[in-house]
Amino acid sequence: MQILLLLLACGGSTPPPITPEKSAAPPEKMSGDAVGHDHGDAAAHGHGAKHGGIQKELEGLHVEGLAMASGVMFWPSDPDAKALPIQGFSGNAVIKGPSGVEKVELVPMGDHLHAPAKLEQGQPATIVLTLSRDGKAQSITFEIEAVGLATHDHTSLHGGAVSMWGDFHVEYLAKDDVFQFWVTDAKREKVTMPLSGKLRDGDQELPLRFDAGSALLSATAPGAGARPVTVEIQAGEANFSLGFNATK
Image (cartoon, one colour):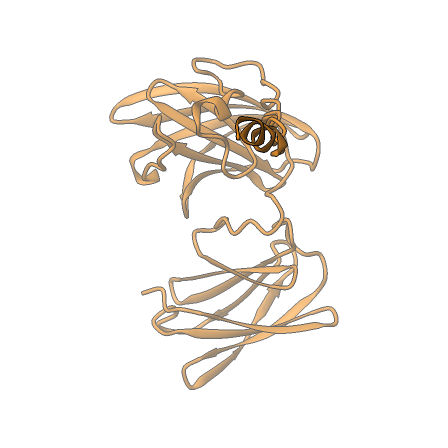
C-alpha cells in the first residue's frame, strides 16, 4: 500500500512555474520643468497620461499636455488622477514653435484648457504653462511635438459633443443661434476634402455652409441647440448622417 501511494504521488505532473510578464518600460522623461517635475514614471504611481500626451506634476496637481497642429490641450487632475473642473483654472502659455514665440491665454474647452497656436506636425515646440488656481500660480515647461490625438479619441476640441462614422469624427456645438459641426479624420485632424451637407432641426431643413480653413459646417437659426438634430454630410464619395441631442 505504501508503494502504491508513493507511485500515485509521483505520477501527477507539476505545472511549470509562472513567469511574470516584463512590465513596459516607463515613458522617456522630458526635460526643462520650470517649477514642477516630469512624470515619466506615471505608471508606477498609477496615473499615466490618459490622452497620449506628456504628464507632469506640480504641487498638489498633475497636468497632461498634448500638442496638435491647432494648439495645445491641457488636462489638470489631482494626485489621485481624478479630473479637476477646468472652470477653477486660468493662466497662459508661452509657446515657442516653428513660427516663432507667442503668448496666449488659456481657454476652457470641453474637459480641457486650450492654448491656441499654429504648430507643425512632428516639429518640436517648447511650452511654458502657467496655471492659476485659488490665487496661486505655478509654472511648468513642456518639451513636446505636435502629434495629435490617438486614433478615434473622442476628446472635445471645441467644447461640444463628438460622434463618428467610419473614420470621420464630427463635433457638434450650438451657440448664439449657430449650429456648428467640425469634421475631423481618424486622428482628429481636420479633413482637407470639400464638405457639404444639410441639417434637420425639427420640421426645418437647413443647408450647411462650409469653411475649408477649419473644416466647419454651420448654419444659423433661432433657438439653435434647443432640440435634437440630425446632420447629413457628404465628404468625397462618403455620405453619412449623425444624430445629436439637444444642448440646452
